[in-house]
Image (cartoon, rainbow, N blue to C red):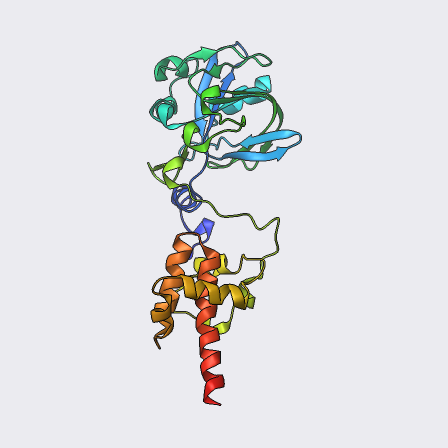
Length: 302
């Protein structure tokens, strides 16, 4: 394993390693104004939501590595204590990237990127009209993490008002993750289109999973099942009953032939196939059916 301490490589090198490892990251498309009211717009991928009550977003403009200067967004945030955080979806990702160009102070990135300035209701910075969600925020605090090039500055923002394009809502008034079509940043020049990679994992909140440690050892040491597979098996609250397993074997095509084989890998492969279909209960039935069959065979020998 390649191991490295931050001080053993250049800041730029370690910065690149961080961005490649901690990804994908949501993008704060931050709109600010300077003390003279001139607009500024720039994307930042050191960003996330950190509280719901009060609603708090945090993003971080780093000091530039090459010359240790600060960005206009940071200076504006300190001067006015207001910001609009717009989300970036696939429809505007190229324009968001263009706005990150380091234009001279006073240049309007809205104009350069071909985006529309939409007046806010509660703060002075403009919203990005093309963004599907916009947060009008007051800045509660700016936390400087260092004074050297590459140092972050946490801009802690309390949401005063949230605007949502109704076209990205579902019938229940919730944001549809496919309709909003968000993008995120990764390392180098890479981005990620979120909806192309969605998959669901049930949250272990309402139930108490048995845990991987409760899975029989021969299954835990499977040559077929992965750690993710074991995680799925360990996330069930209870195992299927023996009667449920017997009925499953009777009703399922091809299961008896697999169980009659001495090759445990084939049993585990069938269980893995069920897991790929998110049918954890069926996977457990296959695995336990083999164990019950082995037990019954031993009894018959006696």
